[in-house]
Image (cartoon, rainbow, N blue to C red):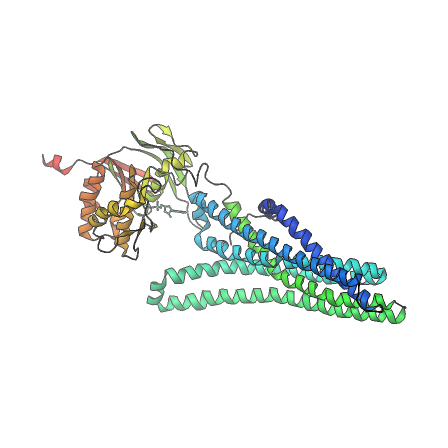
Length: 563
Ligand SMILES: Nc1ncnc2c1ncn2[C@@H]1O[C@H](COP(=O)(O)OP(=O)(O)OP(=O)(O)O)[C@@H](O)[C@H]1O
């Protein structure tokens, strides 16, 4: 399992940072919660007073009782509302902050983290915090009531209170040990849940393959899913049992203590008001104490969830500089050339394997050129493209735009020069014509000719700025991705094996008509291709081998050869 980078101190400072904007609300919640707790304890005192005097509750005592009831009720309401306010906003802030961090994290950091680890944090862990935030207020009030009860008991009788403190210290020690043990279990279970998520992804994304392969299906269910689920059940079950046993012991301790107090009264004369007050408060105290004990498993799991969230935040703590979510492009233009000079990049070595290193790469690309990047599988074509696009920051060398180095600060603006269709592309349903969604009203008319040209107008149209469907064949989905590229109209178009899923007729159209048309409009085209039948159509063919450019050859047009 990958080690995590979050430390307890890191967690605390992260929590502090998150809670800082809500301090006034937290304070309000604490003050009103404590007031509600104090009022509840005073109510108990009043009841005890009434029980031990003649004439029941009347006059001033009745007014006090009503007043205390009002404080307890209003205090509780105010505390609940403000805790809920903080809880919901905190969760919303965590959600937004994580989404923002993921959107602005360097691509290689995201690729290393892996989706199956990301999703449980974004959904399960954040939900866990949300659940605990909901019960936090009542737990805090229970805590305030418990403290108030203790203070009242100390006021009633110091020796009996000392007896109670000893019992509470034993109970608290047992509960703390249970908490530590249970948290180890929850942490383990959380790790298993990550594995479970990975298998869930496999059975949803590999649904077809699993149906075609019985043995693999059996192995996946019996060997992995069942084992992981059972592990989670066992580990979580054990952790919760630890709590249950500690809580049961705590309950027993309570009644033992009441028996001890009553026994004490048999040996040492004790005032009836003290005795009844102690028993009354002790019985009442059991409620808040049970409530606190009941909230502990949730708190334990929320702590683990928080550690996971803090870990994710720490991993993506260094966003790409100047990656502005809200800002439009700075209007960067490509006038003369894009160059790569001595560019190098290395991946981390896979377990038991060798790290792949690309470069040093020297490459010059100009507007109006059609350049094919070719080479064996794994030779580094996609990695080269990611460096060209500014998705990876070079580990050595530099990328230059019109002679100026593309700096980390300018990289996001530089990227806005490109439209890409990767082999593992993501197809957006909504369309953005030109820059930053300009003129969505005219999209249907603008998109229609392209949809017709790409022979998918009979399947898809544009409504309210979005494609009417993306439930299409793989080749058709790639054609839709090309419509995006046309509509964006950016100066550089990069295609990673775009034609691989197209039928021969359309593939021919792509290489012989669509690409030359785009080139004629002045676009720079960078095309990763394995279609050697069409290599001669490129202006240049750059051949990659083992992470280096083996050959960068200008092609002579067939017409000129014929001439
Ligand atoms: N995220 C990654 N982490 C570690 N290694 C990687 C990563 N991505 C790619 N590699 C390694 O880099 C090498 C080059 O991969 P790349 O995708 O650039 O090859 P390619 O030439 O585009 O291959 P293909 O023709 O199969 O698409 C491969 O050996 C691959 O294992």
